Amino acid sequence: MNVSKCSYCQKVPDDILMLTCNHDLCLDCAAKSFSNQQAKKHKKFFVCDICQVNTELDSNSIYELEKIHLASALHDRSNRKPALVQKVNINSEKQVKSKSQTRQDNKENQKEKTIKFAIQNPEAKSSVHQSQRQMSKQQSENSFIQHSREQCLEHPEEEVSYFCFDCNSKCICPECIIHGIHKNHEVKTIKKSYPQVRKQLENQIEQNHQYLTQIENYRQDLEKKQVQQSAIQEHMRLQIAQEFQVLHQLLNNKQNWQSSFNNRLIRKLCQQIE
Image (cartoon, rainbow, N blue to C red; front, side, top):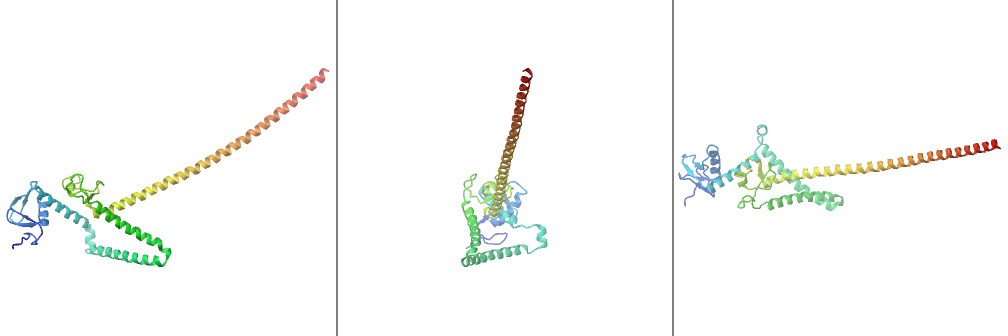
């Protein structure tokens, strides 16, 4: 039984691209080579790097090669580090993975210790609740990824598996990235996008809470000002009432004096007439 090997990497793949020149390529090597060729020409022909013979590809083969190349490019982009960091730390990726794994192990151990401590000490229930919230976040992530496995609205035959950060729209399929409006946009797989999207939502929720707090503070300030204004108005009303009472008393005194003066004057005139 003849086993087909990749003419480039000499591996035995599950799927093979058979060329007209009788060279066989695995899909990974074929996708990489085809993407480099498409940067130079627009015709949908695959040129064998070994013998330079052209092989015409059908639309399905072209789509599969572009999809494989896209997935590989996204994987490389997500794992790529800045050049300066690579020069300073050659083994930084391993160190980060080691630290990440260590932190994960420490978190698991800390959860177990926290739960045991809470059983012995009722005052530690809040720590258990915090651990439960962390576990709930992980369950929400798994649920989000699972429920995101639906069909694309633009391409019903494709399953959505990516998220576009340039558009912040619904999840999209590879066809939207290769030939759709999301071409050359910043995209990541749903699993890798979830922590970043969740962080953005948490920041937005926190910002909304801050806005609500500011609005509540403004409302309380307005209520205080209304109370102060009411107190000032009441004080002014009482002051006006007191001043009016004083003026009224002065007017009464003036009237009484005038009446008394008139009476005296009349009596005096009467006496003179007599």
